[in-house]
Length: 359
Image (tube, rainbow, N blue to C red; front, side):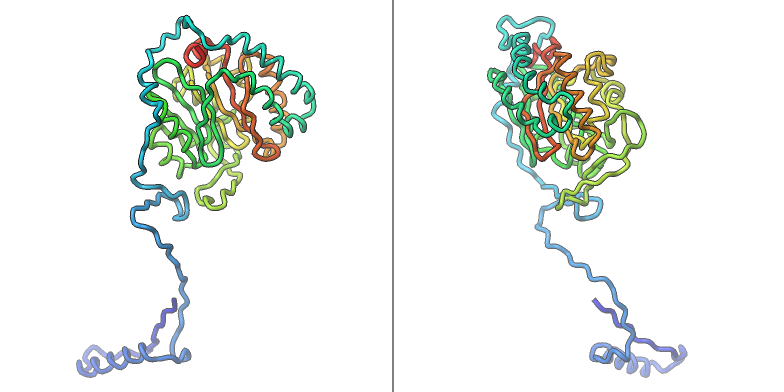
């Protein structure tokens, strides 16, 4: 848009004839409307803004006007399993059920016999274990007796085992990533569930997660302070381009124990774009989680060694230590790209976890 400003150096005194002013203003207006000679005017260039047409009813809650698009009055459809799970008997996790669905000792032994020959070929070969991890899918057949259900979001699938008795459930999301479809699905499926999510990018994650849970605007790492994390800014919705930014970090055990005051997490989903390498060692037997008396019954984990090359060695060591500890089994390996893969872990050691989900 161009703005035309008529320049005039001299102004008539205030006592001038009113009729003269009227005639003068008329000719000025006529000149402005009819003049096409750019030499007679001063041209001021201003920025042209093109506004997108937005349908009535759409709500935008963004930092810059081009971020996440929220739907208004989104229809909520409950999963048919919700009512069934609501009618389960109350949990008594102090005793074993008379009819247990799973022999956990046998399951662990069968898993170890299947997985060890595969991963032993990759011992001390960091590139191989990070590049061929999906080959461990062969051992998923060991878990055919388990009812492992998918919870899909926009870009991936989270896995979970639903409880066999009724009590409050605790679910923790580390890395919201502008996508809560899977958590929303779980919320419509599993009653009496408390959701806690953490992500250093406030919007749109705050509004997404706060619709059903409690959101915390920081990253989870090893030490408190500032850490350079790979994050998805709100303004990068169309390209989903991740960037490295300095973000506020809170230690994992401090978040779970001191802030949330939790001792047992039933379900955890961890996808923090490489930040996982800062605390994987805390899952080891005798590690910081054990020292804080924190138990995680099942969790999804995404590994990002592609963006953190030193993390490839961390993941290698993590796999062999988890196998040595014989606490968790892992399954559902998925490679999204070289150096980025997902898996699902189940705690077969903790009796409360076993009695709630596997008996």
